[in-house]
Amino acid sequence: MTTPTESVQTTSTQWQRLSPWSVLHFLFLQLRQSVSFAIYVIPAYVVGGHKLIDSEYFPLLLLAMGAGWAISSVLKYYFFQFTVTDKGIAIRSGVLDRTFTDLPYERIQNVKFDQPFYFRFNDLRIVTLDTAGSAKQEAHFAGVTSAYAQFVKETVMRAHRQQSATTTEESLSSTATDEQLLNERSIRDLILHGITNNRVWIVLGTLAPFYEQISGFIFRQMNALRPQAEAWLGEQVVALWYVGVMSVLTAIVLLILMALFSIGGSVLMFYGYRLTRQGDKYIRNSGLLNRQEVSMKRTRVQIARQQQDWLDRLLGRVNLYFEQNVTGRSNPNELKATHKLLVPSVTVAESDELTSNVFAAQQARHMNFEPIHIRFFWRQLMLWILPLTVLASIVSFKVLGATGALPPLLILCAMVTLTYLRWQRWGIASDADYIYVRKGIIGIDYWCFPLAKVQQVEVRQSLFMRRRQLSTLGFVLASGRVKIPFVATDFASPLIERVLYEVEVKKPGWM
Image (cartoon, rainbow, N blue to C red; front, side, top):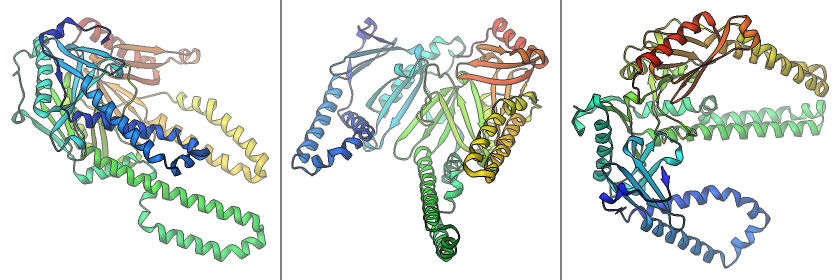
């Protein structure tokens, strides 16, 4: 919570400063902002900015910018103060625009540690305090020792334990010997994660070692066929043909680079991945240059999502997500997200075992799912696919003549096939404790969440759905909304009654 005045609760502890090395952190943030802003300078450079770069004043401009960044970083360090009290953590920051952030312990959902490469040499950390509110209410302070960062984490955990009657007998601190190792990821696993997360583009990336031979073969064949092609089609058409082939080859090179960057990014982010459990806490450590530690309380996990796209299925891998409160957030980077724990590219058996560790007795992959109604498929076909195909056919026929009917026909076949697969994958099931949702197109994702975590149930029916006894269900949780369309009312009504009974009568605690 940000307020214009300081809270009296912070007067019990003296205000503290960060390490002087935190100047590096503020300087790095400014450099990163400048790089992101540079894209807006490109038009100015094209118009006349090259004259400034070539002038004798350009080195002085760079020197002035560097000095401004350095002075600003020192001022941000000087005006940044924080204090840890028995009621919460308060932060004062800003040079001209002063901000006071007061975070009571009950508002702090997670404590995350970051260790960028510029803090590795002196073992300093960035501490991020993640709240259950919006991303703007997230606070962090950079440049504290590892011991102090651990002290902040233990203080927050101790405050949470004191507020929870069910955990008052737990020990006040956790040591490394209390940790239970749940999962580790090897370099091979991380490469597979980079491959599967690059999706279809990685298929072209596998051709990288043979790209020179392939392109050489293509150009030799083009040169051999050029005389005949010019005689049949004319020189202008052949020139366009060459431009088209060059464009395709350029696109392939770019896709290969994307695939390699995806693999490199996976290794950088998840190198040394370890998922451990300390009592009720799950802790993830990972990162090659920037080490990170993210923790999540088991009771706050809302959804376990086993994501398996088409390439994951081919390789027998699953990306497993544990998600908690995301109220008011945008979707951040999967590694930086403090509301989400990702276990990358685990096997199906490992994914099922880890999910059962969080949600005991879950059977996400072993349930008989109730399929959604076939009218979902016919609705998509009649409302979207056929009208768009007819429109594309008319345009294609006018431009290309009779041969223009082939591309829309191929597109129609692809869209019908994908829509049919989507209908076939979608399903819902439940048991005494959990609701399971299955969805996907070529791949299959399994969602599992306890009945007790549902905050709201939405039931929607159009006029035609009501006549056919169908409903669209929406389950609202702290981590977001899960929607299942065209569910038979005979299945939906008893499930809704069970959810309402679980929440209203039993009133389980789940935060």
